[in-house]
Length: 405
Image (cartoon, rainbow, N blue to C red; front, side, top):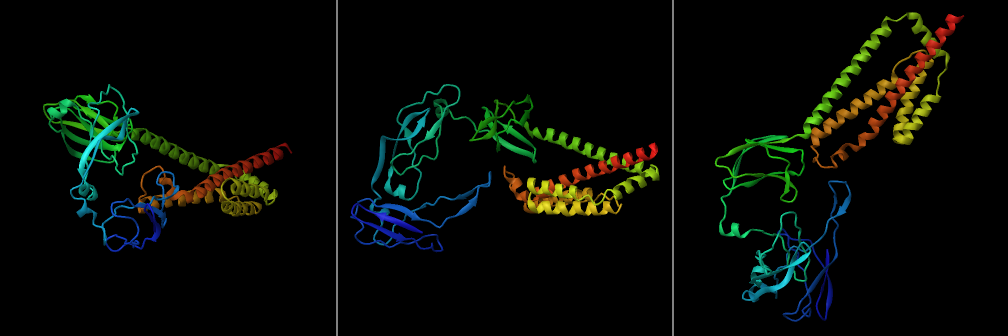
């Protein structure tokens, strides 16, 4: 929204108006802002902040501001004046480092090509790089010139003189966890899967397992395909899903087992002696409302979860205590906890289907607001189990006392 334009003998602060329909903003400069041929410095002094939420950790970030392009305006027509001017660097530019050693670069182009934004090929001044087997680090380093190295090509003399035939790949089938491709590599090639590198990705060719994937192309999975005389089929699969599937199956079996335990327990209670049930109810009635338990439950939920959910726990616990004081032993706490869990789970499913959040490390933030409901559900179900065992224990003690009498 504002820039400072300065020359050797003048400086002016200029507001930047909103861009036009083509994305350009026009600023007016004084005539005495510097002689022709002298450099001008433009500094961004104010911005209209653009705030985004970082996808991985949910941090709030202000996006950087920059000037995408400067163009000739009234009185400034640089492209015409500089068409024939040559811009060159004879090994004075060290824009790269290889294994912490400077790599000097040389290039030659025209000023008009630079203004037009054309790519400038550069070459190393140091001859061939002798790289031994293993890992090497090539880094672009800042330089005083307004140039950026954005692409590095490494090749061997053999590849330069004898270019190999390009490998081809054809996708036969594609899914979330399994891909089948047909690869034709007469001289050998890398098969690259554009997923984040993870050894859980496996590749099986016609000759068997291709081994663990290598890190290629800046963080993806790659497998070297040996030279073949004919296309071969390769199956790429996500093996980590097997453990998840086994875990889901074990969880399902555990849930079914718990449901069976509840059903069998309910039938046994139904077949029990009526007198014992009467004694349990009488014992519950004689103990009074028992408000201490719901108050303690609500306090624990308020401290460990949130004050709002502490109120919900107090309402559920108070209702349970009031019914017990009247001899109506109803599973209020268990019912309330189960209902909360079902509603929270259903809401997660709806959010997933409706919003389809990006599957990154922070995707669970989409339904973070349901965390308190699920924790409260766990508290209520656990409290219900404690209340049931307390009632049964009181009934047994009363029956034992009656038998002794």
